[in-house]
Length: 517
Image (cartoon, rainbow, N blue to C red; front, side):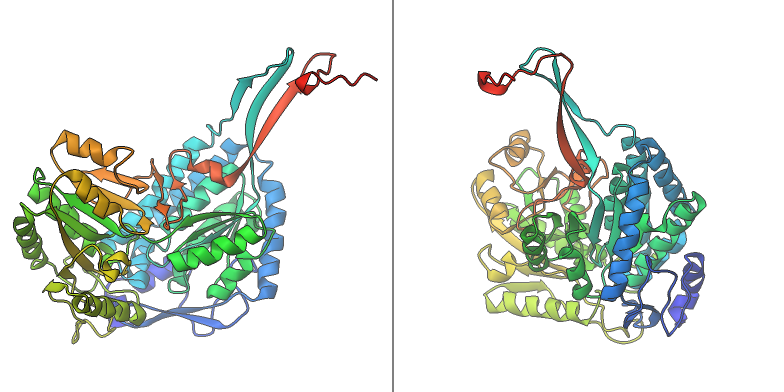
């Protein structure tokens, strides 16, 4: 265990979560771990090895699917409020283990400890939401055109839900899907990112303890580990009617095509190229807070991170200088130290993409006004710490159209009215999150109108980053169109059925057809 890990109690956190530091990999059952090659988890905080797990082979995967489908036959028969009670217990376990799980998220992924705790709180919140939902899984009744007939719609569980999650939210996104799927009567098979496998192991251990205590099948919650090849087993398997995938647009297109080829369903949460519009009527202080946190929070590795700030030319210099001054106050370092604002990128590939983006914006004619660069020396031994950078650019630059998963912020200017800013905001292929900073009611309403933001999330006077559990989360265009978390997102985890009941002794046929026997 490394010096930082010992200093900040990572070993104790791993023990609390049932994870032992081992070299040969861990195994606690076919629905949890595999028998394949070793997958090592290294922390981007200090580059140290945390632990190793075994990956899932094809044979392991089939055992997992057998366990999941068997568990579904039991789980779906339990009344939804009783399933909600199990989710309530899971949420309470998360409350008990919030600190160690938050530390693991911070250490394995690299986000700040406070963000790690916040991610676990999101898990708790979605459990609370799901518990209430378990008593509100409603259908719909409607009047029949035929006398003595009643029509209604109801929802039934789909079966096995496959979940592919990304490294940047290694536990919360799984919980968004799982808590809803569970109360709907589904069982889940989860492939966490190969960059954060231990977060998956920890969550599986917690879930398994709850199910075991209630005498329920282990297969209600299943974990598979590995790279994209393990994900392909899931997307190609017709026993999994729904695959929920979070990640890059490139990955999402592959998943969508594969699942669609077998006429399955996919729920996609993909890339974001999120912008804040700043109008002449904006509150500059609020703008700076929203833009800076949105750009550097989680080291720019959120799908809702702020990538672009579109500023009216009449206040461009004022806003630019305010944001640049704020960047001077940022502290970069060990994310477990709560004095720091920015932690590391996830790995060397992310660092390479960061450097490439800064090179490309200059090649296209942009100007870097807050210099970037990789930090070296004591405290930065992992090689994953970079300086948040700001570049002045134009909307048409290719790099501005691209999502760089790193703390690189582009400042763009617009002139004229709000419609011009909205056109720039919408002029990218991604459509996840968006925001406007203004105290002008007309501008705010225009931004939210049918001709305004084309994103799944549109905010007024808050930034692009973050979302509340109660609202459905997701985006449009190449972001994938999926919706998770609150509102009526639960419906995607169920199959819809229309029912007609004839309570007469006559059978009238449609369109007046006569068929007497």
